[in-house]
Picture 1 (cartoon, rainbow, N blue to C red):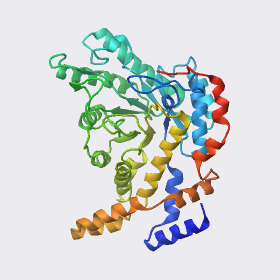
Picture 2: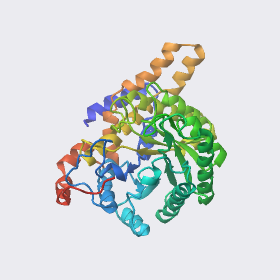
Picture 3: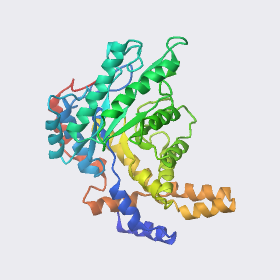
Picture 4: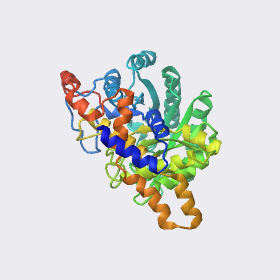
Length: 406
């Protein structure tokens, strides 16, 4: 960053009436959770291309995650996946995270990789399989207690491939039955985040196929149940920011799995395909925060921002750095929306004026702002360059190939 570049940016924004101190404060408070599985060998449904230096166990995954947080200042927590990250002593894993200036974030149960779950987990026709799946959910509640985690993120692959394969209504009841048992086991400070997906791996119907189904389940379960929005889990053309705004207003938006897709759940770096959508999501969130309504402010403050990507051809740590920096960039741009200008244009019925007030914020170059914020935080102004210039990526090559994977 040059002083001249920031001075020009500051002059430009002050002329618009923007409070840069407030904007900087919000940027410094942004936290983005990274996923343990994003550091291990994983990838597409067809082939996992093994990389040298990937972590061999959950402890090394945390060490890689610590590098992302050290350089960006954005990622103090790491989501774990069970049983991919199974350890004998979760207190020890928690202590290791804390020694790295991290904490264990959301717990993610796995109910889609065992042979028993081919035709469903909590929605299987066999009561023994349903019991096994529910027991795993309860195990994850216990793990959350041991790790000090607030959130348990739930995604189910359950569904059918053909008409008549299963009773859609009966599966709906079995799903609620399992979630209700899990919900009753939560501690008062825990949350259940219910994720949805339109299709895949089930192609005829998915048991939790959209945000409305997840929202309906959350309403039936109680206040500790919220909806989790994965930005890669929508059909082309879906207005994700509309969903976000609706759920905020209902007080049921628990968090995000940031992702990016060209067609469907491609696990691409967030913001790589449609950064404007990411910006508009943040615009809706900040618009609610600016409303002055305490219930909306509380709803926004409780949102968990999490990455959910399995990088296949990219190097793991640089890919994660790029992901979180893309989120930070679009958040910074959304902070530049003049909400009063938008509201006044809306009142006048000025369609183009309102659209211009939103789009103009997206078109600003926020690089000087982000450099200034990082300098004030004692962080590298260019975290990616700092990582590439560091020796960490070379040092971990001694791990060899064949590290922790699915």
